[in-house]
Amino acid sequence: MQEPDFELDRKHYNVYGYLMQFRNMTRIDLRLMQPDSILEYIDDAYSKVLLDKTGNYQQFNFNKEEEMYVTKVATQYEFNKIVNEIYWVSTYVIKGIARKDFMYAEYMLANPVKNAFIKLIKQYILSKKDLEEYNFGKVNQHILEHEEIKDSLIKISCNVSLESIEENIKLIVEQTNELATKIALKQDIKYNKVEYNAVKFYMANILKTKDDSHV
Image (cartoon, rainbow, N blue to C red; front, side, top):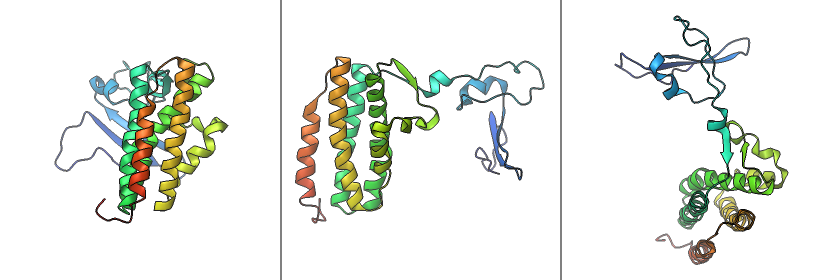
C-alpha cells in the first residue's frame, strides 16, 4: 500500500488516497474526498463513487474522457509551439552528449523532447486519417496501434548509451522535419523550416567538438 498524500504534522486533507494491492490481485486506488474538491482532484476519466454517506454523489459523472484523453487538431500557434519545443530542447540533448553527461542528455530526450515528439506524432495521425480528434487513451496507450510510427517510438525510448542518445536525437530531428512538413501541407498551415536548419547547424558544430569538455 502507498499513501501518496500523507505529510508529517498535517491534520486536514481535501483528498487522501490509499493505493492498495490485494492478495487476490485486485488493485484499488481509493481516494477519500471532501465533496467540494471532487472536480479539482479527478485525474482519471474512469473513476467511480464507491461510498457516499449522503447519497448525493452516486450519480456523479466522472466521465472526462474527451477532456483528458482526446487530442484535437492543433491550431497554427499550437503546432508552432510543439515543433519549437522539439528543436529547442534538442540542443540541450546535443549539449549533454558533447559534455558526456549521460544523465542530463537522457533526461532531456526522454522527457521534454519525447513528450513534444509524441504530440507531433498524434497531429500527424490526425492529419493523415482526416480526423478532427482522436482518443489516444491514458498516457497515449493507443498510439502504438499506428504501425507507421511504432518502431520509431520504441527506438527513441531505448537510450542505453550516449551513442544511442545521439542516434535517437538525430532520428527525432529528421522525423520532426518530415512529419511537420506533411502536417503543414495537409492542414494548410505554415512550418518554419528555419528552426530545423538551425538545429542541424548546431548539431554539426557541437558534435564535431564533443571531446572538448568546455562545450
